[in-house]
Image (cartoon, rainbow, N blue to C red):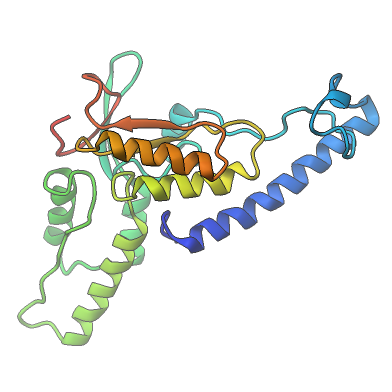
Amino acid sequence: ELPYNSQEARDFVDHLLQHWEEVSDEASFAKAEKFGAFPNFKYSHHRNGKPKRNAIVRTLAPTGTTGFAAQTTGGMEPEFALAYSRTTVQGTTVEMFSPVLEEKLEKYPFFRSNNEKQDLIKYIKTEGKGSLNGFKIMKGADELEEDFKKRQANLDKIRRVFLTTYDISPDDHIRMEAVVQKHVDDAISKTTNFRNNATIEDVENAFILAYNLGIKGVTFYRDGTRKDQPLKVKGSKF
């Protein structure tokens, strides 16, 4: 339960993928002992190391549809939005609401009634534009201060963790990608999303940061650039 844009999350991902890198490399080394290294090993940047069977061991492929089927995010993406519509290649539109948010609302409740829960869902789908940032709760007339503070703490935790792609700055998208890039052989399939008011300078600065952090390739998308974009935030005009 770590915010995507936090240093704690980046440290956790770094530690997790370090283990992934070590285990997957060992598997490639073992295959090389049995079948030999890949044909161009002696010409590759691996040539001074232990023979590997695979020139490329780790990649993060485009997995938007796979993530959709598994009810999770694709690749290393944050949650696109807590409520959004997804248009498939067949032209079917599917309305999405985060199943993980619903699960965590049970774990960290901050509602006094089901009506208040419906107010949150309505907020996310309209004014919140797919996010719960800005949502507030009110202290009940007969509610103890201690109980209200507990509800507020639960809301703060949910709000801190459930950041959507537009709640996260482009810089923080890129900084997380840089952490992952250290452990991936290929360029990474990931989109850094910009709001519709992003400027040329915003995109230029993001490209420069990605280059300086050693990322092999980046994809940027400015909301509303395409007339029929496949993912549309609820409450947004695009």
